[in-house]
Image (cartoon, rainbow, N blue to C red; front, side, top):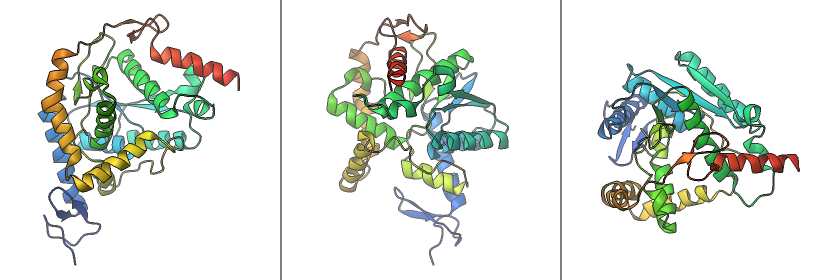
Length: 310
């Protein structure tokens, strides 16, 4: 019978540490995962100088793993959880319920934001409308804007997101293929504030794989939304992730290699030659923008018109 390679117990289930070619029990995997998260946070100085920390938590396995791991690894660090209800029938309510229960169990402050209530539309509304824009792109724009705005308006100086290695490599893969230099320079473990209304962002799970997040959620018996967002079907992002997994079958550790090469080789050169954009304040909402009206306000205006006409 298989035993844990570390503690030698026969506890089930056993999780495979692919990079170490080991089988470990739930407790040993949780310890491995938390140590890896801690090392990542310390290596990139993610919590240096942080006074008020917020976590963007969706209710999925990644952000739930992030919240639990930070509680275990940095028990003295207090944080608030920010959750967006995007108005996707059944799915969004399930997400919110899971986050609320977690916050109640661990006595964590929770800030809830209902997109439909405060902005007059939901991501589901857009998903039901025929448009050239893809719903995942719209959702990303909405979430990035609102998370920053909520964090800024509530006095947080840092916000942590659950982006993992698979997420970041998929983004890098797409940006390098398309030569999106201005966007590539922004892909890093720590994104410093470039404007008084832009909150510093950190990615504690940037070296954790999608599978490791899943195993940790299971090993810590975490509740999380196991179903896929109903609007993500046919997403190019999902297809790119599948392709990257196939590449890694031929090139072991491809994801780690791409991230390391980006951070160590390309990013320093990009930061030297790519100047940060000049920011102004949006005429509609007052938040930082490259243009006179920010992407979020333009998008919101279009969606509201589409909703009214359908």
